[in-house]
Each structure stands twice: as structure tokens, then as C-alpha cells.
Image 1 (spheres, rainbow, N blue to C red):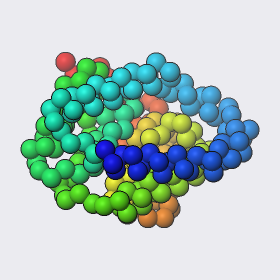
Image 2: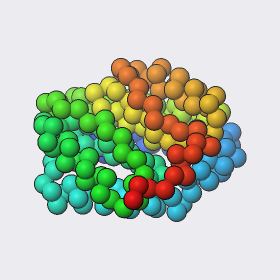
Image 3: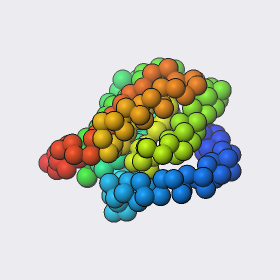
Length: 201
């Protein structure tokens, strides 16, 4: 859990700077923000939080060491990224996600590689904070509709775009951030039918 604590501490350290950005962005993006929240809504966000808790409990129950596994969840779509040391561990982690009620899709971005040190986590957190800050300040991007994470310089993007034009603007922001090596784009458009598909029975 040390790595998670480091990532959390670094993210919290960036909050004062981001708070100023929030104040600047509220006036310009207020209406966009209102519309954006409606894409998932409070009930959808609560469902995703419940899914996250259920997955984490399954991992703990099965003894899966999850310090190097990260979850991004949006409307029942679960993106699992990070690194484990064996194919068996990866398979069990992904299977555990599928077993949780309400999961519509599982995106497996887990690598089988040795763990890496604190310096790598610091770089990844810096990348995520930079991207989130830039998305927040962009007047023509509904930033609340996106989830961003990074592992070894590879950025994982999940969420819902209001249009293809907005999606491209988001990708441009992500790709321009210092330290980004690759981008895994799992953003759906607002009217994509996969958003409304029932979870597999």
C-alpha cells in the first residue's frame, strides 16, 4: 500500500494549486460543467463507487497484491491498469472484476513486468496532475466527464465525450503533457450505444 499512499500524498499536495484553477474555471465553464455532470449523474457515480469497493474486496479476499493495480470506472466500464509479476495473477485479478454485479465491460491494461520504484510513481502522479489541471482550465472540454491515470508514462483515458471534436481536443491535451509516452484512449461518445447496454448476464 506504500505506493498508493505516495500517489495520494502527491495528489493532495497539488490541490492548493488546482484550487486556484478551479476558481478561474468556474465562471467560464459553469454551464458546461452542469451539462457534463448529467452524463453520469450522482446515481451513476455512486454505482461506480460501489463497483470499486466490491472489486477491491474481491482482490483482498483472494490475496491479490493490488499496490500496482489501478481502477478507473465509468458507467460500469472498468479499466484495470498497472503491473503484476505473473500471468496467473493478472488473470485472477481480471476474473474478479468480471464477477462483480453491474460490470458492463472490463478493459485489461495490466502488464506483466517487475515492479518499479518510487521515482516512477512520482512521475506518473505529476503527469496525471498536469493533465487534469489542463483539462479543468480548457473552456471547450467538460473535464468532469473524464478519468485519467498513468502507469510508466502511459496514460489511460476513460469517460464520455460530448462530441468527436471534444474527444480530439482532450487527446491533444493529454499528448502534449510532459512525460507522456503513449495514450490508451477508451473514451466513448455521448450517443455510443455501448453506454446503455445491459451488463452481461
